[in-house]
Length: 292
Image (tube, rainbow, N blue to C red; front, top):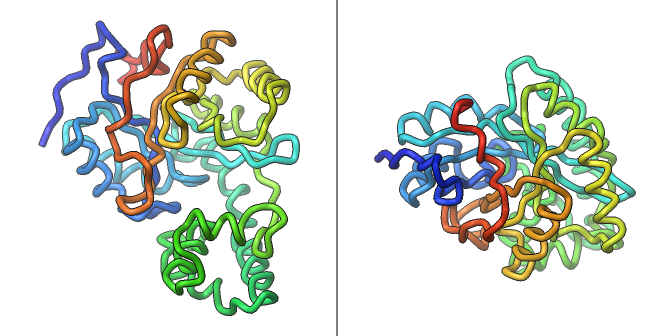
């Protein structure tokens, strides 16, 4: 199946989905399955943005080409900023032997140790063997995450769903939460830019930041060379679409759009089924015609 060519004369008309995850990080579908799903749902421009990993991009690119999709190589970088975990999406990144791929290796290095400590903490409250149980959900052992733990705890019947797991065990102050120091904001944006990519603040509505903190995050991000912010995403409410559309205009950031799809049974929004960007927003892809 192929999709129609995007209408570059009206960037808002392009069905772009620039944020999703495969089994290479914490998604449940392989890169080629995601490409097929995106094409079936009418996506024209698609990006795979696995957490701290670019290992799935080559297969994703091949599959996208087979389905007639414009492919945007991407990644979602975990960042520690002001004591909080945030995410920066990189789009149009160079991913082979690039500053980005080298930097991500550093970010991934502490995940196994954190996972073992999470399992140890959960054992203290009577839930044994969680690390081993989570491993069967892991496509890439270097990227074992809280989501893999959550899937195992749901399967065991400890919790009713993934949201319940996070609320009871895997957020700050809960027995299975172990903090980790990720990349700095400066490192993430610099790695993305030095690899030829465009940096975007991922799902800003998810972060526990007040107005002043959000303004400061955006100020620093722009100062470092960041260019975009996710406005329409599966992690946002309809009200947040409008809130972050206003912020994109206020700060001169381009607007991105992505489902943050992880799998058919877990995601609020399917690939390609988000509403368009609000009027007035400048799409992050508005000047990509010659590049893509």
